[in-house]
Image (cartoon, rainbow, N blue to C red; front, side, top):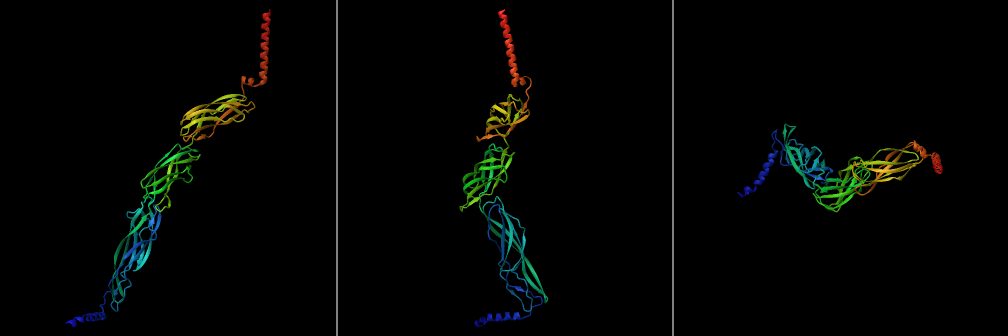
Length: 437
């Protein structure tokens, strides 16, 4: 009994060998003893990105399937395909719940045999408002693989495939950053050609607390708003914090009444101690145009060789109040002035004041119209001393008429004096003679 069981394995081996020698039926198939695709994926290179950046995400797809073992009866055709090969692999990347935008459509990766790999690139964009942290991008792989192969006849092999699918989570990371948002902008009487202050309230909408933060304003291309004092220290700037920075700017003389762009950033130290500058934000700075004046009347007439009192009304047609204003007229040859300045006081928009000047014209002046400059000196809201653009005052020099001709001619005056003396002497003599009689 014991001997019988001792020889049983040997008998089994002989029977199996005999079966292999027996011819198979004409339609016998190839029997696969194992093997199928095992698909994995990973990101090659950097997987951490900045908010607002564009990146090329290279995904490496690997087939870790084990090459199959197959049993082929004698005198049968060996199949060309293997069950461990992933055929017609189609790869699609999705954003999922991440702040990523996948810009590449699903694409074909071809066939991936066992123990081989391919790289598939995807163009992605990180949203500007992305919060720092780790996110998952779902990667979907669809493929087919050999299920079994069947020989039909002496020279034909039929293949039967099955569909497979794998879903691989890819881990990506967004670098935490300080990201600013402008809450409010206030401007203090900004006018063309002058300086002023703006106050900007900023909120940190990023996911990082910046150290040693400083807010800075920068000129936006050719904007007429130019920084003069362009930085404000903030210090520690945590997520959700709001701070206000006050900056001094200068407005170009050619600026009109409008809102003009200005860039603002925050410079800070990250946890590694590196200096980082946030993405610039463009703000609108309201400019109220230029301070201007108009005068009435615009024309005066003075006889040559004469003196005239000129009363000019100055109206503030600018957008803001001017303070301690003083009007001045510039007398040039052939004019002279004994009173060329006049106080106007404070003038609000559309308010006016009267100024009195005294002008004299040389007697040799040519009879024609002259243009004299008038200007207003004033102080702005920052107590800066400013001078307005000149406004022309037209003065016509005319010939003297009537009594002015005689009074302006010394010969005529001498004759008149002699006649008056003669008439006086005549009446004096007659009065004296009448008394004596």
